[in-house]
Image (spheres, rainbow, N blue to C red):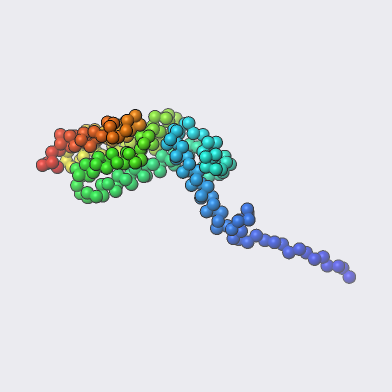
Length: 221
């Protein structure tokens, strides 16, 4: 009589069990948390020290992880830089839209509101100037993705201001829009060299008011 061998039951992994022994539902959460930690750390370092001065090793170390985890979440540093700039642009446009929404159908008042809110916004978010303006100084035209994001942001700023100038029936809306853009961009840039309490940024609101008066007096706005 042939002796039957007793086969050991095959232990199958539960579909809820991840390869590292942790519940499958927890793995994506853990990955997201690592990714968020890397991204948040990189944003802070890029803003404080500059994009080119901060490498992958420094980001991984500051985030409490390693280069393998970095590249598991981001294909390259350039892609991380692009996401950093896109996030900054989204935050900026959210602030812009919320400011304009307080004065619907009043284009001149919307422009004034932007400059009313400009100084507090600069003090809160731009202690080292505008992240996108800083990136424009650091990055060359060879950085096609990054340069594209910068150009797109600047073009959108210009388009929005020209559109507001046309809506308020300025005599030369394109000139007015461009002049307002120079005030905004210049104010953020000078924030690095001089505090807003005493720097050129303090004059942005009054300069904008003078431009609005010159191009479209209140009686005609």
